[in-house]
Image (cartoon, rainbow, N blue to C red):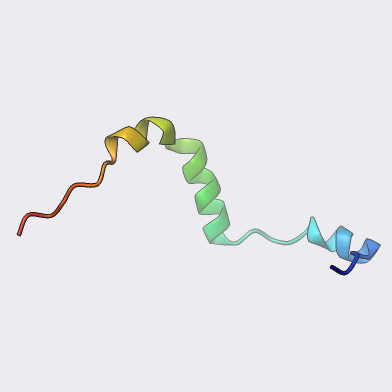
Length: 47
């Protein structure tokens, strides 16, 4: 692995977050995933 330069390290923290990343961060903050895991069980589709 190549070592990062100081310029690379400084730029890495300034990268703009994408709309997808912002959406996922907001969803993690809003949705109580621990309680939703037990509620969202997989059920077979009747045919």
